[in-house]
Amino acid sequence: MSPRAGTAGPHTLAFVESPVQLLNVLEWAHAGTLRDPGAGASGPAARTLAPEPEPEPEPEPVSGGRPAPTGAASGAGVRPAGAVTGLTLVVLSPTDPMTRGQLRRMAELAREEGHEVRWEEARGGTTAPFHTIGGLAPLLRGAHRVVMGDPFSRYVQLLLTITRARELVVVDDGTATMEFVAQLARGERLVRWHRRGGRPRPRDLLFAPVSSSARRRLTPTGSRSVEVFSSMPIDPAPEGVRVTANDFSWTRARFGPPRVTKGADLVGTSLVETGVVDADRYLDAVRALAGAHGATRYFAHRRESVEKLHRLATEAGLEIVRPDLPLELIARRGPIGRTIVSFPSTVVHTLPLALTGTGVRVAVCDIDPAWLTDTASPRAQGFLSGVTGTARDVHRLPTVTPGAPGRA
Image 1 (cartoon, rainbow, N blue to C red):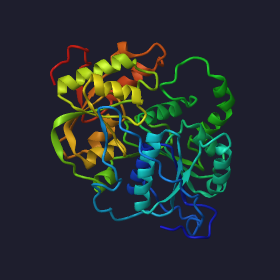
Image 2 (cartoon, rainbow, N blue to C red):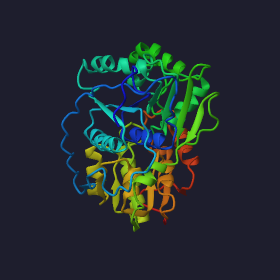
Image 3 (cartoon, rainbow, N blue to C red):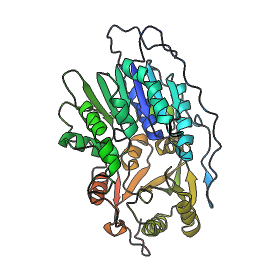
Image 4 (spheres, rainbow, N blue to C red):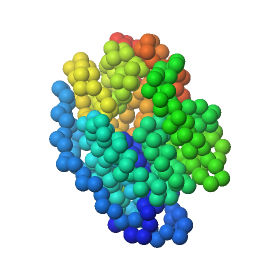
């Protein structure tokens, strides 16, 4: 829907850097949290969107696998009634080809829902951040509400220093939301859980004033509200923060129900790529899980390296699927195995919600402390255990012993 002229900016401005963040903004809007601020404004301002770059070629499938079916609307149902207006989605595009491809398909879905989408090549060179921030500053100053998917992002933290919005909303960026809420409640500096403990790096020290300012802005005051829209367990919430449950109602209304197969599917994780889990231990664990559950397909995380996926295909005999949409939508679109096996990750919280009523069982296997690398954060094991322990409606599996898989 086209915005109406007459104000300095859109009612609501959302910043996303990943497909999951964009999905959760759509869920937030569908849930009815996009309210008319009613502050005398006649609506969002008219503006000219920056032209979106030409579509990029799809990444080549790794050896032993094939890409997932393409087409964002494939398997989509009838669009639910009650479309919202006044939401402008700003994609701060990363450089990773897999993430960009999924973001483009999610952007198509957002446009189909009637939302404006502005694509920013935010990392397209040394001067790109200055051009991006300069171009967004007028919109930020005019927005009544700002929605963000990653409060740990330095880009987002910098943009927060510009906005005058009276309402701030944080939507899920996976399990990181749990750590964000805990740090906010304790008044700590915002730092990702998988970062190694110890003294801050020089870049951290240089950026510290901006990070501190962002944390203050994300703390509710008498004139500024903060909402967290999440499918993660948040208990207790920081004082004054409104928590709204994400039950994936938009996903369930838009896709499926899926065709459920008799087998099992494995879900990949980027714990190796983030330096938390040793690559060889991870490969052994995946091979053991595949043997125990009879799984033949492996749904790769968008950040998993081609080299690691090649090893999984050749050494574990798995069909590697690189999804073109977030896994919640892929699973809902189907076909999907009757059992989905995952390590501790966001999907052990989100898939049971997205697949409610389908009969699909989600099972989670804990990370053995012996799998952790020497450089893993001291918080890693406790955080991962918390991800598993707080998951609802999942089946807990014993930690696998490579070479001697247990019974499914």
